[in-house]
Length: 231
Image (tube, rainbow, N blue to C red; front, side, top):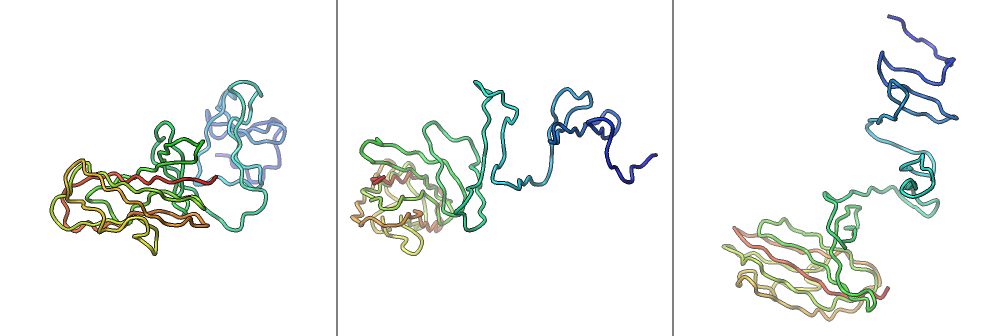
């Protein structure tokens, strides 16, 4: 079996890997991976993909420049970034009208936002189950936003134990709703409404549900936070 010990160049524009395998092809200085017939592109599988310039990753790079052939470029900021970070995408494509929100650590999730943008009023909904692990991430409250109301709606009342929940932020877990204001052991359909009367915070806040499951064996609720966004 022949071996290539020092390949300086070839007389043709492509190098085929194994008989009938893919072709590594040069096209105006760019590397292309084509099928054995040199008629269509083939995928590249690797542990990670890195780019060495701010230009980023281009999707549909051979776009013709019209209609559905326009390309998409994902790029990092050209300046101002002060540290590495990772963005983790949600586990699904989400539902209509949902938006991507972050937990402040790069984990993205779909959030349902309702209310008219004309008056800056929004409502975020988070589900809580009897076996949820504390703490439950909710959403990021924008800087200078004001929480007007927190609603806890029992879809299924809790069974057994002494489970409790609060709504707030790390370090101030009852900032927007204390455990004494919510009875998880009420009846299905019960709604607890809390008006926090908290002043606007100059920085964004990652809201959480701090939950103590106790020995609960059933229960489900929805937590709705209504707030105004000064933006």
